[in-house]
Image (cartoon, rainbow over all chains, first blue to last red; front, top):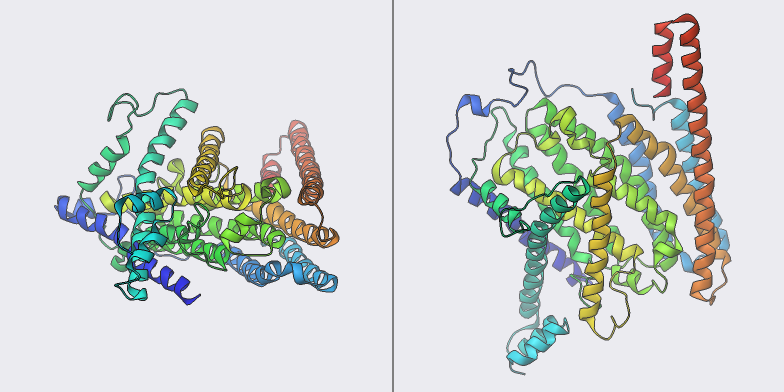
Length: 118
Length: 416
């Protein structure tokens, strides 16, 4: 059991080599002649105006929050699904109740207009 | 036991070379050392295999898309069919200068190409290639896959934020909104096979498929396929790198080998999704004679993977890109409620089927339930589309009467 996760750890360590070596080779083999114009931000030929790191649309936050609710829900549902064959019928109805509550939440968010994209 | 080259080759054909080498080394090496060496070799084989197959996939994709669009595609490098085209491209990218834009966040900018490839490769650790041939058969295999696939959102944001470029940042925002949204139906759709099989281990899921799950729960397979395409950012969901709108999206400022890493990760991910679909819905390596001769299982597995991948390319060659509001509406207002409803229905039906039923009979019952749920969902879509059509017609009628432009504009936003 533990050795399974050792394999994953080893995998992470070795997988870094695969993108690392080509990039290193690329920096060694490729030319290095930087100049201000080459390093300027790429944007349709005109110099960029203003700061790039600005506030972004609040819409993205709302989608992220809705996602969070549903992803946490999925984390709860996975163990239940794996043990589903041993569950009594009563537990199944509890699971369904859990999903229904989330459906209600989705309906609420929908009605509030959080899912509209402007 | 001493090493014998013939026996080694024999074990290689039986896909049991790891077991053979473990036996050979068991006499003169501590167990942890031989295990570690074998693990490293297995990992290197999986990763290298991925890199090589991606070169082939890029060629295949270009060739097939070209054929769909009535072109020839690559046909110069490496003979008549241009097989070495991607090798030439990779070599070209290697010799290009790696430019770091001024004002870039160096750490984020350099970390992104590393993380994206590592995350893409890591998922291959739990894909079963043949009976007994798997990186490691975690008992939470599918859960692990989902966890790692969530990580692949992070490098996109790193790249978009680190580049100090407005197009890149816009592309990164779009990517995150899209990937995060479509992860919900994908995760939920994968719940259904787990619910039926009662295990999260990948080999366990393959073994449980007396009947391929694509025949048992076709709706779940369809939802997974659609949301996997969106997760990958492939057409028709490729607005994270819409060339005509935001040029290339998050990897706009990358050049040379760093750009190649993004490209590589994209193809590894595509191939992985095809492999995951095969494993979970198409019976993985299952097929006649696969249990006796593992090599046959390997062949079946790859035939299925490439068929699924061909479907991906086919979809890419056929559909136009959709708008971002359509993309998010389709996910949150159609796929998510549909998947939640499907989970509830399947949960009840699975409990109602008595134990010891013939697997084919149980599969038929679930199949019919799936089709029914799908038909109900389609009816909802049909009604919705009809309402929209009536609204548009009313707008055009009022336009004829009054020519009131402002009113048309306000209604048009509602319609879209």
